[in-house]
Image (cartoon, rainbow, N blue to C red; front, top):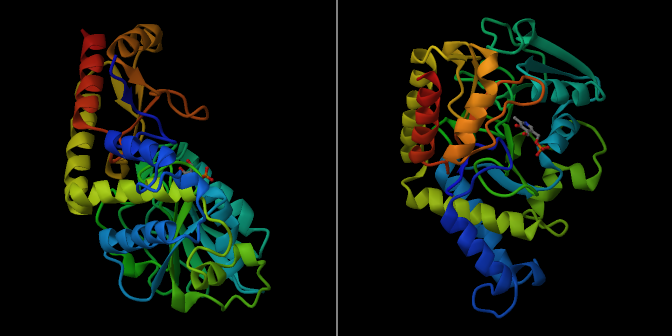
Length: 353
Ligand SMILES: Cc1ncc(COP(=O)(O)O)c(C=O)c1O
C-alpha cells in the first residue's frame, strides 16, 4: 500500500532523490566506486560540495558576503556554536522562547554568558508567537526559532534590526521566500526539507565572525569551517550528496517561489478541514499557524482508536503528535505531495461521518 509519510523528522524526501541516492551508493558517477568509499578530496566529491553550496546560494538568493557551511552535530550543536562564535566575553544574548527547541538553545547560551529571554509563549503551552516585545539594542544577537516543529507555530516577522539575527530554521528552510539579507546566522538540520540526518546547513555572514573574543575550538569555529570550505575534517559525504540532490529537485520544481505556492495550498486545505470538521480542533493560534507542522486534536478523545484505524487503512504514517504535546501533527514538508494531504482530509471526513 502507498504510504503517506507525515513524519516530523527525519521526513519524506522526493522518490527520485532516494532513487538517485541509492544508485550512487553502489556506483557513483560511473566510477564503479560508491559515493561513500571515495575520498572527500576527490574531484567528484568536491564537485558535489561546490554544487550543494551554490544551490543553497541560488535558491535562497543569498547576497554576497555569506558563507554556506555543511557541518555535523545537528541543529543541537548550533545551540552552542552560535554563542561561542557571536556572544562576546562579558556580552549578552537575547532569545525569543517559542518552544522546546528555543528552550534548549537558551539553556546552552546560558553556559556562555548573560542570556535575556525577551518573551515566551510558555504561558499558553507554546501555542502562539509572542509579539510586541523589545529587543535590547546592547545584545550581541537575538535568536529566533522560525518554525516550532513540535507545537506547529511559525514566525512571519523577525524584529530587532539593531542587533545581529540568528535563526534556527531547521523545519522551514527552503519552504518560503524570505529576505536572507536580514539574517546574520541561519542554521538548519538537514533532515526535514533538505536531506537525511547527518549534516547541518549553516549560513553565516562573514563580516560578523571573529569578534567574540573567545578562544573557539577549531571544530566549533565558523571561521575555520568557512575558510576550509566545509572540508576542515571529513564531511558527512552521503548527507551532503542527498542534500544536493534534493536542492536540484527543488530547483527543477521552480525553486522556493513554486514550492511556497504548493505549501500554501497544502496548508490551506488541511487547516480548512480542521476548522470546518466538528471532530477536530486546531492547536496553534490561527495567525501563527505553521505551514510545515500542522497540530490538531480530536474534540472527542474517545474516537482515538477509530481514527487510528481509518488512518492505518489509508496508508497514513507518523501522524501522532510529539510526546510532549499529544494529539496529532501532520508534517507537510516540501516533498509531501498534495495527494497525501487529500488522503488525510478524506480520513478526517470519514471519521466525522
Ligand atoms: C526547530 C528545530 N531545532 C532544532 C532541532 C534539533 O535538531 P537535531 O536533532 O538535528 O539536533 C529540531 C529537531 O527536530 C528542530 O525541529
